[in-house]
Image (cartoon, rainbow, N blue to C red; front, side):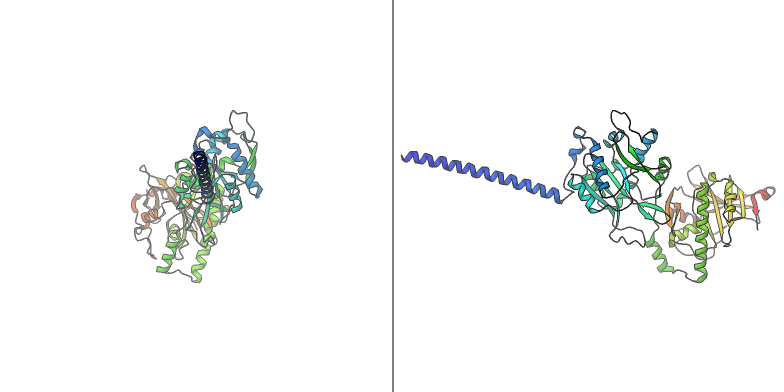
Length: 471
């Protein structure tokens, strides 16, 4: 009897131990699961998306596109497709606005290997981003915490854009309104955590390098959009109305902000002239530049700030009050005789024409302000450097000014969207030497420039053609 009771006790004790073990295991599993859910919810950066990078589990990207379109539409926002690579593919097929009978839609194939680039013209609200997170999208924002833009009220930094990732990845850049009716966008590399944010989504710089925001800051003229159906998806998005024009502008959209810290340093060291004559000159010079800009844009000639005008931009982010003219540069190959008639039509008259279009060409115009607009034409050397010429009216002597290779960037100068050499300080130093930061009020164009050298002389019999001075 005792043995039977003992066996029953042992069986009950064994079952109790098993029950305790099972219950403990379940509680531990529940705790681990709860911890994982909490971590997943709280930290967007701790969830790795390698699962979605495998083509073996790649689902229909139309689902992602459909969700993205619907969520933004619910909040009254429209998405513009501005992806250069994708738009280029669509341009090959001019019927991209129609549904095509393809085995697989073009955007589906594209999204298997590329991040699709959208744009919005305002900051995306938190509710929109939270909506995507609730739908299992990885969402992260790229911000420039210390922007160089002056007079900005964005003290907490500037939003560059957003990365959305579920099965496919999408980058949505914010187009910020700037002066002169243009849009500015930032560079994601100005976000100090950029590499980390891309890595969490299973992306690298190489995978988004086709997106301008991954390469540089940029500036675009405001463009018209049109709603079109994305072929093979039955989803409509906004597209640039003139795709070819947009692609051309987007590929040359590189932007460089004026260095306001340097300008403040210059003002602190050397002051800023605020006399009535200085203010009057700056105002008239600005109006002259703005008017010339409209003429050059009308006839399709690209120009950039040059010489003293560029020096004022670099040192002061403004116009040098004691200069006597406005200086711009133009590639000689861009010259067309319609420039003369167009300038005349807009209130300019020719003062001086020197050299020939193929050699040391230079034009000077003025308007009723009496301020001179000097247009220097540039030529490319075999080694990639550039030069422009100068001619002394009295003697026919020629001079040559050599500059290092450069490409052009956009900038905002006194509220105007204009071009400058991207390697601005190197360009300035070539012209004004290493002491370019120090003001020089006495300047001789034949001897003062750091890069000037004699370049021969015009034959006297050619003077009537190469030295023309008008009243």
